[in-house]
Length: 259
Image (cartoon, rainbow, N blue to C red):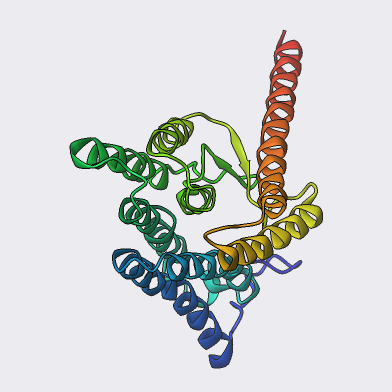
């Protein structure tokens, strides 16, 4: 960084307490890996509601750790530690691996080789997505279905879908990982951010109430919960189309200026 006189300014000095707060944020993110393990153990033991409560906790951590990381400027205070890599590791465990285990243990996947193959599809698709350098765009969207397998598993259990319906859902969403639709990143989006965050909070509340109501959730509450999903997908598709139109217009303008 340079001053107005052209000389290089001294690097900013952070207090030990501020650096410690940054380290605590990384530990907060890493705690999701422990919750992922507990989710798998709960699934194996047949404690479905416990697994879903743990899933809600991981959603909360993942939804708040980024804001904390930016507030405490962890990239500057702990520059040698890759928080984005940590986040991806934890998210793969909690958003992908643990939910697929939960679907397996709750009997929503076929027995035998067919079940193994079906379980492998989202695991492999998400391996690809988590390694894409453009999985999160520069203007804060997820490119391709953002591996919300925890949300898929939640609705499979709440709606108690059949093996056939579950299989179709897993295959369709796995394909969507590779389709360049731009999905909302609620905590970092610019347009309609406040409204989207408010709807997200309502969805989290409905998640908790639906878990309490299992195995017989109220149909009206399921409808309220699914309305957020419709909003999320609808706005994602609309913003994808709008962005594509703007990019085409920009390319056309550049082409006409180059003539």
